[in-house]
Structures are given as structure tokens and as C-alpha cells.
Length: 355
Image 1 (cartoon, rainbow, N blue to C red):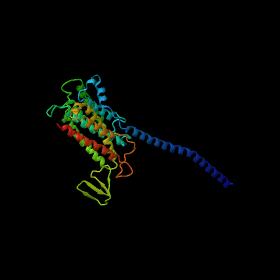
Image 2 (cartoon, rainbow, N blue to C red; image 1 turned 135 degrees about the vertical axis):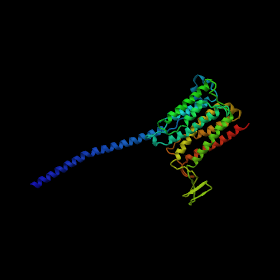
Image 3 (cartoon, rainbow, N blue to C red; image 1 turned 180 degrees about the vertical axis):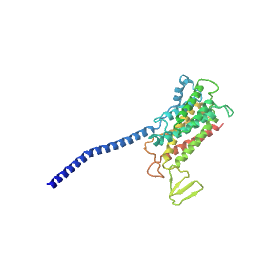
Image 4 (cartoon, rainbow, N blue to C red; image 1 turned 180 degrees about the horizontal axis):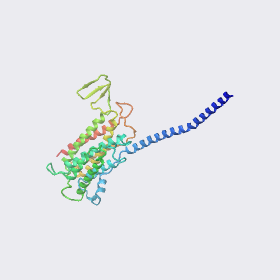
């Protein structure tokens, strides 16, 4: 009798345990589903945010930017007004585009993005070159002339480190540079003498284009080095410091890692984006000089070549296939556009230096 009671008691315990397990199972499944759903939503949010803040800004019209900045003085823009307004617009776009300035962000998910910070590096490089050319060349009558105070301030502010996130933040320093450029623009357009001078001479433009040549040459070389050239030699050797054979691949010294290839690509895109606007502005401010040198058409052709390098990228990733493989090579295509533009700039410099 006792044995029967014990058996019944054991069955009751087992039934109770089974009921508890069955009741706990839905709760466990719901908890796991909640964790998994939260993780998926987080990844989706990071992906959408990354896509939105990584979109490159649209091109703008430099002359329209100058007229909007000049206001009531828009009908009589003096030389240098279009370039100054364009530089201000480039700097504002750098700071106020989708996601703001990302190069100094230290919080996720923005610190995990590298394409847009690389793009910002290219824009900032061109911006610094243009402001320094304005300070040293465009705004000075000769080498013994005094520098314009506003351009001195702007040059110093834009050369502040790009990765400082506080005390002071890079954005704060760059906005002070923008204010200095706005002060210079005001002196250009209101007719006040002594501080708003701008000299649209051939030698000044030649000096600036020489800097552009070096930048484009460097970018073209780095883009070309982003992809190893296919080779069939298995031994390791080095010849005249120009080519290195390793693992059957022929690579150039200083070759860019495949992990860094997209960064170089977007840095070049950023530099070209800013350069396009600067050249369009120079086309306006140096119009009479270019016409007298028959250089208007050559400069316009350079701008058209660079516009091809700003075509939309439809691939979700930057592909750098080696040799004549099945996949495209974005870096070498961009390097081709840059090389052609650079060759045209060299010819333009020669044309401007004649006579």
C-alpha cells in the first residue's frame, strides 16, 4: 500500500515538473526572441544610420553661392568674391552635412565608419590648400606685400588638427576660420580698401595649379597602388626600389593594403569634390585672364573630366580586382580620371605661363 502511494506521489511530482517546464518554455522563447529582435533592430539602425551619414553631398553652383552671400551687392561681384564664398560653402558643407563632422567622433556607431571621415580628409586637404593660396598669393600684390589679417586667421584655423573632439573641438576651430573668411568676403564686396584685395594674375593661378598637380599626382599613385598587379613569378626579389615580387604577385613599394583601399578611394573623391567647386569659382574670378590667354576652354575641359570622377557609386563596396579579372576595379578607374585631369592641368599651366 505504501509502495502504491509512493508511486502515485512520484507521478504527481513528475507531472508538476512537466507542467512547470511547459510553462517556462514560452517565457524562455519570448526572452530569446526579444534579445534577437533587439539585436536585429540595432544592426538595422546602425546600417541605416551609416548609409545616411555616408552619403556624399551634392554639388552646388559657386556663383549662386557668392550671389546669395553678397545679398544687395550681388550685381557687382569683385574678383575673389566667388572663390571666397565657395570656400565658405565648402567648409560649411564639411561641418553641416548629414551626420556632421565625423573625423573626430569617438562614440559608436560613428567611430566605426571610415568612408566619410576619409572623404572629409580629402575635402579638408583641398580647403587648406585653397585658403593658403588665398593668403600667400591671391590676396598679395607682390612678395613684399603685407598679408591680409582675415586670411592669416583663416589659414591658421583650418590647419587645426581634424581629430580633436573637445577642448577645443575641431569643428569650433574651423567655424572660426569660416568667420574669418566671411569677414574677408565682406571687405571684398563692400568696397572698403586696405583689406579686401584680390589679384587675379597668371602667376598666382599658376602657383595654385602647381599645388593641385602634386595632390592629384599623389592621389593617382596611391589609388594605383591599391591593387597588386598580377604576376607569375614565385620568387621574392626587388629591383631598383621600384617593384617588389612577393608570393607570385608584382606590387609597387608603398602598396596600399586592401583594408585601406576604400579609404584612399573616398579621400580622393572628397578632394575632387572640393576641387571641382574651387576650379569653377576660379573660372569666374579669373575669367578675363583666362580669355586673354585662350585658357577658358582648357579649364572647362578639366572641370568636365573631374565631373566624371564624381559619378554615383552603385556598388555597396569598393571593388579592386587585380589584373583583367571578372570584377571591376574602382580605384584604377578613379586613378585614370585623375591622371587625365592632372595631365590637362599641366598643359594649362604651360599655356598660362606663355607670353
